[in-house]
Image (cartoon, rainbow, N blue to C red):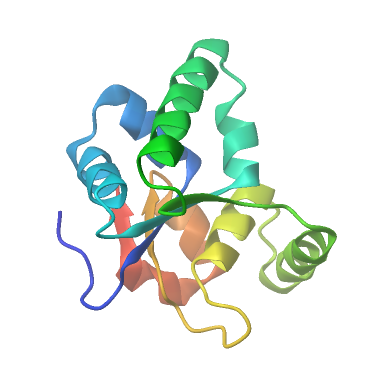
Length: 144
């Protein structure tokens, strides 16, 4: 996996969680490095909701996240869907015209607050959806 220099944080889209389940080597490598404490990982709460539609997948993902929390607390975090974030998602939908709440939340998670600087790599199976929200993220996407 080739990642942009200087970025130490990964944001997982639903496609990345599906990729984890299917054995995608880039997703597995990212998760292994996160579990080793070399990198940080973020999973937006909206991604968990979307991935959790499938009961079998839900059980496997829960096991992976529980393992991550036991091994190294803080290296893999769930980005909460706060009222403030929900309003930010709504504003961004209005700006970009893309109404996929998950894509918008993933794109927002890839930028630091409050500076707005892109500070994460996005693991996704939907490059077009993410770049429709934020074209600057095209350079930090790893397709899975």
